[in-house]
Image (cartoon, one colour):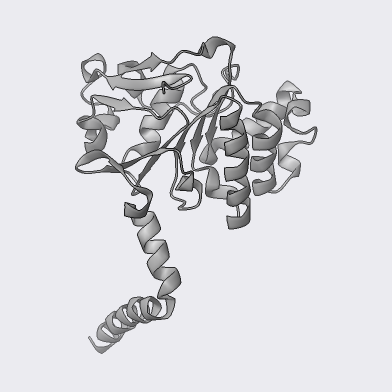
Length: 252
């Protein structure tokens, strides 16, 4: 089943400076081609593993604002994005991206996007209430429910950042509705709830590269499961180690 919008991406790193910081990230430095799932593709990994850098490059290469928003957003608060997008080619699926919906969400710069929405006077597309006049989590969910219309490609960087576990479950429901309406998602996340969508590809970023993994094989699932099922023993081990280290320091 071909992806509705993006089939795969390729990187030709000769098209950017070898000094670009993105090329110091092992997972990106060795990447040449990455297949994208027709419904949902997840980027997971430790902090600094390159998942947000690659997601940003895909977004910018497709015409999205580096700070987030739709393809129509042109504002810039601070230019900090990598040139990696210049090395990236997106192989298109059968649906024309030009006539589709789309959005790039960056949790870290969502405040700037909300400010731009107010300045543009387009609150009606986001539920009619300023996103600044809602809690952080409410503003995220208002975006998902009111602005995401379906038949679109949605690139989300840590959408769980403002969502409670219950809201993350609601996000999965909304995500499924949008996929049923012909949408495609690419999501960078740390949340074992958000990455649990059953019909998806999960890519784990590490120093070894980018590997496809099963949900149950992810550190996020295994660590969360271990903690929830063996909370007391894990806490005893974790806190005992810290207390022992503190005691040794005091004795010194």
